[in-house]
Amino acid sequence: MQTLKARYDSVRSGFEIADIGFLFLRIIALSGTVGWILVAPVPRETVSTFVRIAGFFLAYCVSVYALLFFRFDRKRDIYRIFLLFDFAFVYLLVANSGGFASSFFIGFYLLTALHAFYYGYRSGIAVAAASTVIYLLAGLQVSAVEPIDFLLRVSFLFLIAIPIGLLSVILREDKEKIESLNRDLAESIEIMKHLQGKLVEVEKLSALGRLTADVAHEIRNPLTAIGGFAKRLEKRLPDNTEEKGYARIVVTEVARLERILRDTLTFSREARYHLKYSDMNPLLAQKEAKYGDVCREKGLLLAVRQQPDLPPCIVDEDQIRQAIDNLMTNAIDAMADGGTLTLATRTACENGTHYVVIDVSDTGPGISPDLVNRIFEPFYSTKEIGHGTGLGLSICKKIMEEHRGSIRVSAASGGGATFSLFLPYVPVDEIFKAQCWEIMRCGVEKRGNAADRCPAFPNYGRICWSVAGTLSETKLHCSVAEKIGDCRKCAFYEIVSPSCPRS
Image 1 (cartoon, rainbow, N blue to C red):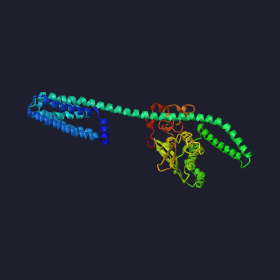
Image 2: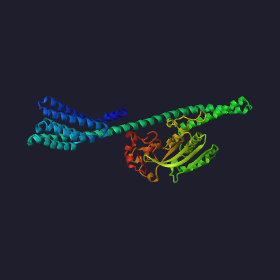
Image 3: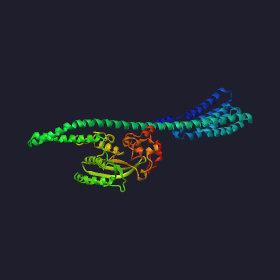
Image 4: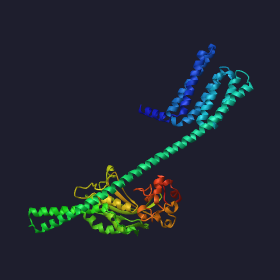
């Protein structure tokens, strides 16, 4: 029953006005035949003949509509099969009801009109020509042809086929244009929703950053005083006393609060970046030396895999080191029972943009899918209270956004997680080609603090859609992209042809 209901729903959703026309044509044909039998003064033998013709009509309609129900996706071919039976039915009606004088000739008009509307004027003309031949054969069985009357009747077949067929073609083209516009509109709405979501997130984080910075500054001064007095008190108190223990707890907790404040200020303040071309492979070698002993003490295997001939990218090495440190610390904490920590570099291409990618992978318990979108939120942490500030990944995300890149996480179902830092770079042969502001004439290069106004300036003018436009993973900055709504429709996007696949 479920299968039949699903099939019915599929047929119902795909039913068009032409399908209704074909169905009503057959209902009218059957009703007209039965009505003619009941009303017209015809001999008993003729009535018997027409009952058999009606039975033939009903039988093939039921059979073909059953086929249509189960193979609605092939309806255009099935309607062609219908046409053969319809020709036979109208032929029998005309041949048995007066030939050239039969009123059932109107059936040829209906067939011609419907097929011209459904298939176009070429098919309409073909049906009109076939109807002419069949009408001639049916009429000759009864009487001789009267040329003037015959030509007048069949000429209307072609007069019906051509204008209805041409109108059908125009309507079909208009329908396709409307459907295409609807698809483009739906895509534009989805893009706008996505951009609106990113804008809301950026504004929320900006407001949160300002608030936390103000709160952190207000807390820092009294906290420093508390910490200083607690350390003095700890030194003056006798050993092995409860008061000494209490003072030590105060000192420890103040130190933890200071770490939280430091991370909070790092997250909230506008850092000054010192960007230069750097190779990421030496950074991995430094991390291998720094964390090698720590991993051995915790029973972890540290593996470093460097892609040879890695292209340099524009970074602040200190900030990238901090991002990698945060990720490695998290990975080590996640593997309390041992495992493998892997550092790797590679290149990637997305949306016509080249990236240097740094992967930090662990074999820990992994991350559940419902947490993947939350782990980059400020102050969100899966660690126990007192073992983290919840700002490590948020700081990584901020660092990557300032580098015009992104951070992504992929978690395997069997455990383990990989955090990937995507750093965009422009190939050497693209650096000296025309930049987006030169082609689009947005004037960003003439404004003060141009780099603050547009992340693409001055180093990423060949990949502006990925760092400042609608294909970026951060806030939309490009005024041209705001007007267009989709950078893939931008003239500059079409001009640039990097050796990298585009979506």
